[in-house]
Amino acid sequence: MTATTTAEATTAAQDRTDGAVTRALVRAWIDGWIVSRGTSDPMDRPWGWTIDAGTAHHVSRHVLPEPAENDVRALVAATSAPGTWLKLFADDDTVRPWIGAGWHFDLPGFLMTAPLTAERPEVPAGYTLTSWTRGGTTRVLVRTTEGHFAARGQIAPTGPNAVADQIETSPDHRRRGLGSLVMRTLQNTAYEAGATTGILVGTPEGQALYSALGWVTRSPMASLYFKPSEG
Image (cartoon, rainbow, N blue to C red):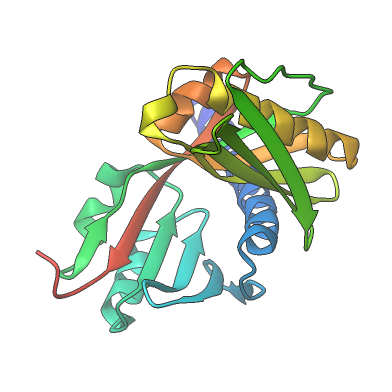
């Protein structure tokens, strides 16, 4: 075997390893996301999974951890139902040429992970924090002392993993440490439930917050929805 052939084989083996890791992380994200959102169980497909979300604007989603052009083009061609989403774990520019009319890009996402440890965040002056757990999901709500909404988030532990979801801070209360408060509170809840790894898909804005809290980006994610009458 030549040096070039050896290098090519090593690269191919690494690609397979990276692909397997991404697929495992995406599946772990799905397992927590369906608990958090109360959706259907994921349905296995040759290219990934389909999930019924069951709302008018989010009827179902196809999740492809290693999107291939032929698979994406086939899904695009077969879709006629508005409210169908594609979650493709690649960057927008890679998948853009594969997408047809009626499809629209949402904000790009980033698959991220973090080791979970004990956290004891302090609630800033002027705010209160409440939390509750139902159906396997813990929700955190931050309000002003007058009761106005300030921030929220939720997390769904599933064994060793926990998926953080729907993290939101009101525009009127940003840059006051509330996003960090919500995340650290959720991380501690999941840690106390026995989870060791946090997983989420964040927006570009969220990625900055999560990175500052020690989360590591594992993969980009292109997010698209089908709405033929739009634009």
